[in-house]
Image (cartoon, rainbow over all chains, first blue to last red; front, side):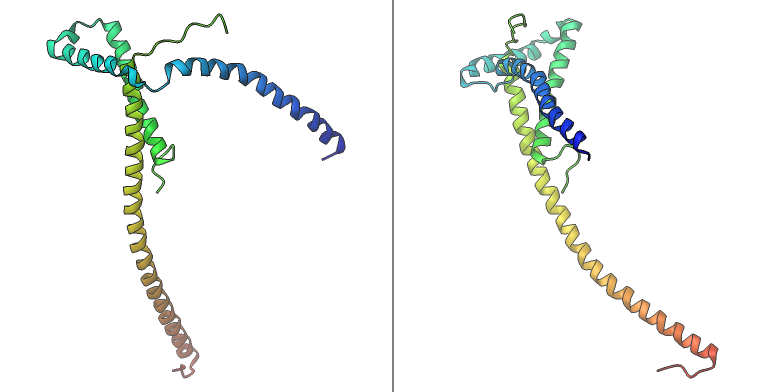
Length: 104
Length: 83
C-alpha cells in the first residue's frame, strides 16, 4: 500500500466511525426508550393483572364469547399470538446456542 | 425525541406469556441439545470402533491382493514366485 493510500485511510477511518456512531446512537436511544417500556419482563406487581387476563381468556372460551369477536380484532389477536409464540423459538435458538440446526 | 409516539403499554398477560415462552424455549433448546449431543456422541464412538476394524480389514485385503498380483506376474514371467 502506498503512503498516500495509507494516510487517506488513516483520515477516513475515524470519520467513518464517527458517521456510524452519529447514525446509530440516536436510533439506539429511541430503541431503548421503547424497549424499556414494551419489552421488559413483567414485574411482580403485574401478577393480579396477569391472573385476571388469564381468567378473562378462559371465561371467553367457556361462555363462547370468543365467537363474537370481530374479524379485524381476531386478526390482530392472531398476529399478537403468533408474535408471542415466536418468542419460544427465539428462546430455543438461545438454548441450543446456534441459529440454524442443533450443531451437536 | 419529543415528537415520538408514546410507547405502548403492553398488556401484562402478553408480557408474561412472551417471557415465559422465551424461558421455556431456552430450556427446551438446552435440554434437546444435550440429549441430541449425547446420542450423537454414542454413535460417533461406535463409528470410530467400526472404522478401526474396517481399516484393518482393508489393509489385509490390500496385502493379499498385492501378493496375488506379484505371484501372477512371476508366473507370467516364468520365474519361481517368492514364498
